[in-house]
Image (cartoon, rainbow, N blue to C red; front, side, top):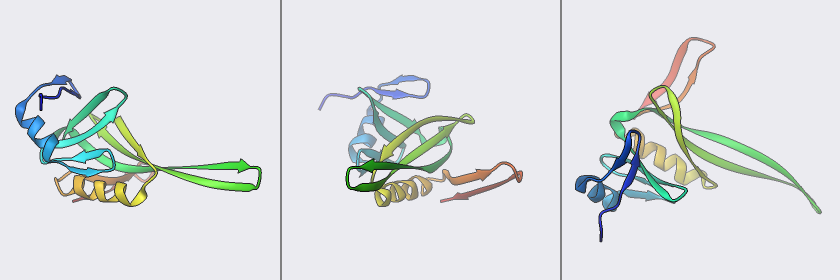
Length: 129
């Protein structure tokens, strides 16, 4: 297979070790967690974020209530959000809560802080994997 090009935080990345990591990464729907970082599709690009660049990762739940002809339905979307340099860099959306929880646990196992930060109290509520 030809080497892939990845869109990283600082630009395009073309490295054989990143390609090998991508091919061997654990797959959670279309989000991949390797030994070097996280990979996911963003439009026509494949994004790569190295674990040492991620300040924190968490899941944001988006609930949508829809009215239909026969009643109402709730749809939940789970977004894995990556904080890089103090800003939310990117997020990956899925309808599968269990897979996103497993992906977050895999990310935490590489030493990335996961969880939320309660800023109004001034204390962090993050957990390390």
